[in-house]
Length: 428
Image 1: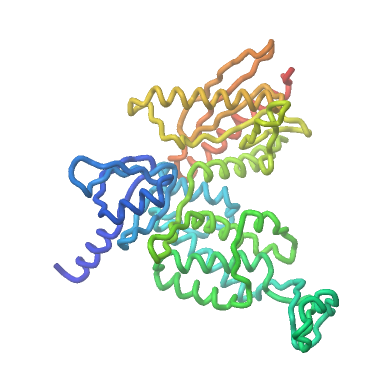
Image 2: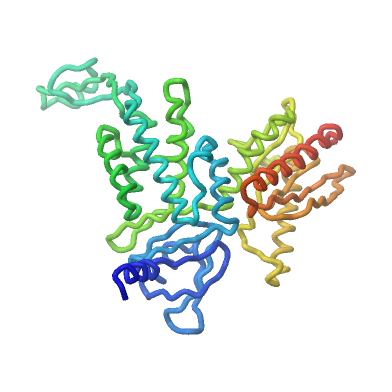
């Protein structure tokens, strides 16, 4: 066997290719199976096969991406909707429309992850060439020389013995600001996530080293929410949205022995929900409709013990018209596979949830949006002389190119028609 073929063979042995929600028999050693059972029970379902002690039936849940194993092998989970559709969903979900024309559509999930990382690193390089944003940060330090203002009370309390020190409050004009902290944290975690190709790893490492002044602290969702875009930091918008996507993929972090491994995983129901929120908000605006989702919550009962958190509230002129909820089939129920009872139970639970939303928000229409090609269906429910309509719509995410845009447009028009009907027939 030639050296080139041997290398290709070794790489193929190190990778395990799976597909979201599809079960496949895979050979795993004892260390690998223990790791997956202990660290990834939510993302990967495992059950022993009958063909041997190391044979397992592996079924990914509603996740896609990569999971490094202790042995050095990597599990790659491809999305059920197709990689091209996932790429377009991410473009909408993370406000990356300006990148859609520049970056080619990836071939597989490994290519997608590396493409996103490469685009992120290029954007960070652009920021550093322009000069990182700076801002004034209030600091307090125990110094040997006076700087700024002396904190008299703190100085007397802190330096009773060390009289040669001064506790000072001062403002520093620095790159250690929230926007740069997010970017450095993302670079730092990505460098530890896997062995990237040199064309990605080298500039990533260079970018991280150039940000040594920036504090390397833990980043949460609140850090992104608190960033307010102005003309001064508008050029940070795309790098920060890419950082948000990558940090969400890196959020499933585990330890195995002394080695830390960072999987890169996308929770597909969350991506689908985020894609619908932003896509519909833009498309329905032309029909005079608004789509709300951030911080949207309400109590169903007078005792305020039952919380309602719909994915989207569609309204017009300050009035709520209907509720919409994204359903990606996270349970994986499949009627074609004979799981009819589970599918019926999941469908009934969805209708009950929509009924609660209609009662809590005092609207007559609720919409279930499923990630599948499905004809529109409406269930009519009478509640104390008031008619509630639960609509079920589908969006075919397997479409590509112009067909994907058309199916998004069709869904938007159907939602606008339901909202228009609710506008002329208000809830009682």
